[in-house]
Length: 66
Length: 316
Image (cartoon, each protein chain N blue to C red):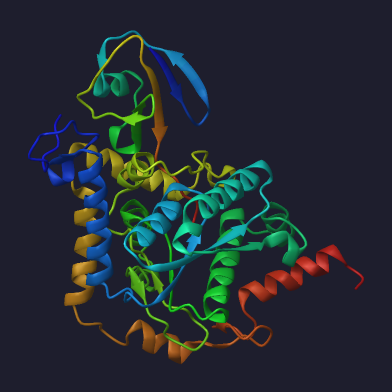
């Protein structure tokens, strides 16, 4: 599956099928700091992702000093 | 994973371990609205007839806050401060304008804009260099000043910011690590208009995590700027948030227990000396240049502007 990542913006190919939480673990990312979006729909951590899926892993942390 | 609220067990779009729940789109939107309504009521933020000024940046939190307040039927306008950070500011300004035109306008809400470069003669990065101050601290001073000025001058009852549970827990962690007691006093989700010239300030998203707000924005098709402010890279706040998210992953509910526990103690333990409002009334006086409250003769914003103008026109 094609996975789009941010900070910096890049794409990686990951072998499926795979559950969302396994994908995040493989990329060493914390669920609490990210959303996983398939197409334009949010998916939960137990969702099975297939090779044909377009996935975006979107970071949610932001913030400077204020 | 199915929605834990729907009788028909619709497919969930988000799991919330700290609440031991999972929600479909509709139930999640209801959950977010209920959390905001609870915060507004519990911290006496504003009444249905009040005029609210939302501080918007183009990011998920502030646009989601504007969206939620309008959905709940409040009278909420917004102010965007264009900081002049090149392509980042252009993109965030475009997102805010798009939301104002396509959604907020249909609720009768309007967008106000302040452009830093027009008043200061330079963008935030150039100002920070001229002033020999960190960019984030320069930015904070300018935004606080402009939002307060707009709220007071245009007679809004209250100013609302998009600070969320993660922001407040990370700030609390930083303040506790350095025992900054004066800052701890100012971590309440409602800060009163303690003196003439200060707007009342509220944080209606304080019961919601950063991830929940981002999810709300995705579910409700709010087009926000995902890119991080280039000036915030490597900031202490982000480090504190990462640490707290590690703890949250191991022990769901850590962030809310930390911040809400602090707020509970703040309300149940009587203040040892004087209240924040009493202290403000004792220590603040109008700035000799602009009239906004300050502890010094001239406020830090006016000092910054004077320095910036001297640097731009050294012989004037």
